[in-house]
Length: 195
Image (cartoon, rainbow, N blue to C red; front, side, top):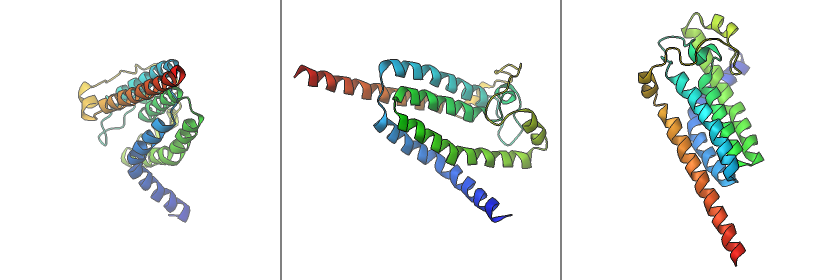
């Protein structure tokens, strides 16, 4: 293994370990920087629901380490779970109305999620002989057109097994926090105007 490949491998392992704790840290920074408005929270919520739906459909068809998922959303993109997360992030960035959040999200994606995606693809390549053919036909992230149903092979049991409902709960809690921040800011501005 070349020194560059060794460094990439090391960073991929680190990125896999730190992505969840960094996600929680990012959530705190997000709430601090967010400047929500009712209209943008409504627009952001629609985008967030779309991302949650994509993640739900993908997780409900994924049999981790057992078989290569190629149906439903996996016929459109090799990484529908990450695509759903990106869409959720875009929804929250819209709701926050702060350019720095967009910048931080982009950096977070490039330095954390891209190495994780590459690492997962290396694992899939070594585990499933048909992965290379699948990768030639289906793009990594940006979806291609496919006539296959997004809900093909949907399994409620897999959805629950992967605890994908946590994405819905987390999004609802973040939206509630945004609404609280917006309400507090509005009341403070109103109180300052009354004096």
